[in-house]
Length: 208
Image (cartoon, rainbow, N blue to C red; front, side):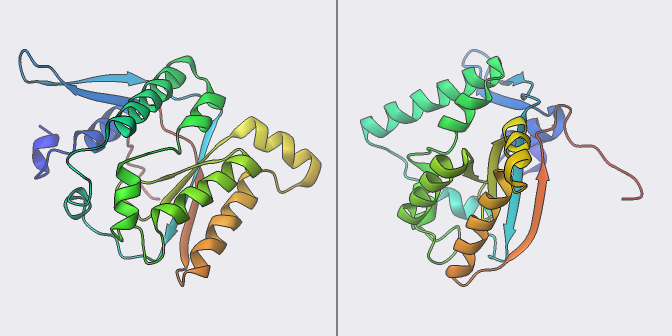
C-alpha cells in the first residue's frame, strides 16, 4: 500500500523506511507479490552523508539513463558483488561490505556519465575517487539513491582506533577529500551527516 503511493512503486525506499536494516525486495513469480528479506546492519558500520548544492534530478529521470541491457561480463561482475554484499550483511562482516560496496559497474557509471551527479562527476572521476578512498582510508563511497548526495561507509571501531593516534581518524579526512573534489568542480557542500544505518526504519521525532 505504501509503495502504491508513489508513481513507480519505489519498494526500495518503502522497505527501508518501514523496516530499517538492509532489505532485498523481490517479486514472487507465482503470485506476483513483492516480498522482502530484511537483514539487520552491523553495529560497527557507520556512514557519512555529504549533501552538495547540486540540483537533484528526479528518480524517473535518472532511471532513463540506466541502460536496458548490459554486457555479460558486467552482469556477472554485478551479480557477484551483490551476492557478496548481501552475504556480508548477513554475517555482519564490515570488512567485506567496505571492500565490495563501492563497485557498481552499471547504474552509477551510466548516471554519472549522464550528468545526474553534477557537472564534471563522470564515471572515471567517480571511480578514481572511490579508489583513493578505499586505499587510503578504508572508506567505501556510494551515491545515495539517485544522487547527488555521497554516502561514505566506514568501520566505527577502526575510525576510533585511528583517532587515538592522529585525532582525525579515517572518516574526517575522507569527508575532506570528497568535499575538496566537489569544490574543485565548482560545487559546494551544504550539509554533512555522520550516522549509522537504522535497524528499525524511519521514526518521527517530535520537537526536533
